[in-house]
Length: 446
Image 1 (cartoon, rainbow, N blue to C red):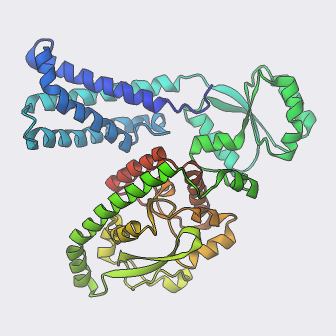
Image 2 (cartoon, rainbow, N blue to C red; image 1 turned 45 degrees about the vertical axis):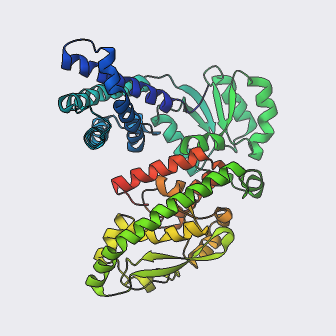
Image 3 (tube, helix red, strand yellow; image 1 turned 180 degrees about the vertical axis):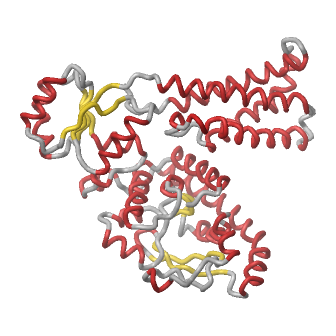
């Protein structure tokens, strides 16, 4: 049994495509009062195929295939409608501005959007009920701490996790208590979720194996946490884990694709910077006549200092060197700075660093000079995140709603960065790019 069903998003996507195709057929049938002929279908086939694929992409960006999609039933209609409005606008542009598409179905397109939206909402609302009724299997959880509390809560609330915590025992409980619990409830526990590397649990594994395996499956609590939250539990961190799972070496094909993507997007970002520069510079000069750019010193790959430029968004020409908060409390964000930060325009000049190879499009967020050293002193293994190039966007940025404001929030960022470093691949990088577009469109913090 798969504890977290990773195939559900694929299944949902395939069914969504079927609904979109069915909506087109039904729309044509209602429009022409007969079942669509092969010729009529052929005329609509190519342009609507593009719309179908683009719609699935928009649905993904909108979060309809996310981990908690079945937990927010009340938000489903709103999400679907917003996504369909975007799809409708793209469809209008496709039909009316591309000369090769001779079809201009004003009524057909409008009816298709309305019908497909209604069917998608009904299907998604029904899906929520269907997955909410799914059977969950009882588990005995042996663990303590904040991460275990978080995992147990998610196991109960998220329908895509196939188990729930029926009973919890402290890992330092006596062997007698654990064995007694299993013997009295063994028929109900199908899973034991425990830290198999904990000395207390590790000593009991032979006895648990002898008495209960394979009827009861034992799952490493850290593996389950990583699978559920897509980040590494920091309680698992030690030098052995780092040496086993962290490497600066990637497959050569991945490196080639990543560098090619960096060059491609670096060129696009640099061209965009040139285009918006006159307007940003004019706005900054009108507001306070200060400098347009700031030059920041940040931590690069391997902890090596690096420099890059940003459009100035604060009152003072901050060099990017970290100082105590009290000393920079008067350095406020300007009105222009507020806008360019919200729209991420202030980050555009970093495209040059991406082209040079000092940065990547995707990677852990770099720290300003001094702050990284302070965090390394306060957070164990923090320097591991510098084993790869820093990025303009990354797994932590798209999963946290705003930049870390405390050491505890920085620890969460580290757990996401470690997940990215361990699992970095073309698939994960594609997810990050799509989630970044979602963040930009929704104007969420990064």
